[in-house]
Length: 208
Image 1: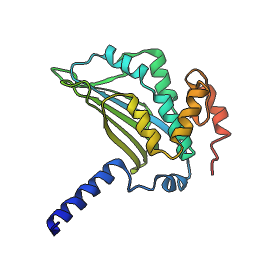
Image 2: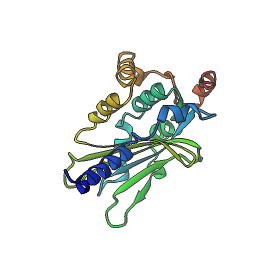
Image 3: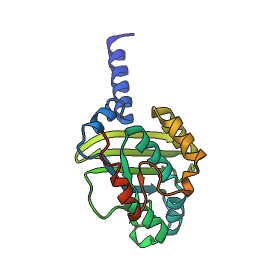
Image 4: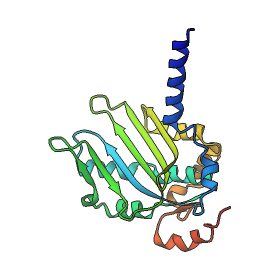
């Protein structure tokens, strides 16, 4: 293998690690944060030709709470999804921001208030081939990127499968979530789902 090929391989490996966030020592960086409470602040659903109504159906079915629980357990943080829950419960499609003129390609839900510690999700479904799906989750603090999960999948279930593999506590937290039926319970450890949960979560916010 010549030097040019070695250099090309090195570049490819760098890009691979960069886009999957593997160069980021996420736990160490989060442990250094003075405030370890995060907010789910944005969710983009990209699919050409969709309506607000079809986007709302997608948002309601997506396992946001389960994903956030896995992250909260992995990084020992509190994640507030109150605003997203209120959006889902209200079913108010007026708050969705469409993007596109002739054919709407993207609908975005976003939290009104700006937050320093935030988590965002982008879900991209190919119009011509619905089996091609892209999932991107970002964890940020101010202008710093703490973690990026960026993957192409052919089934939504693979999101949880991939997270379970990439998170040290992934298998354990997913098992706990499903065995204890956390989908139908509130509050659950590490997650703030409503204003009534915030008092209880405040007792856990001084995480070391």
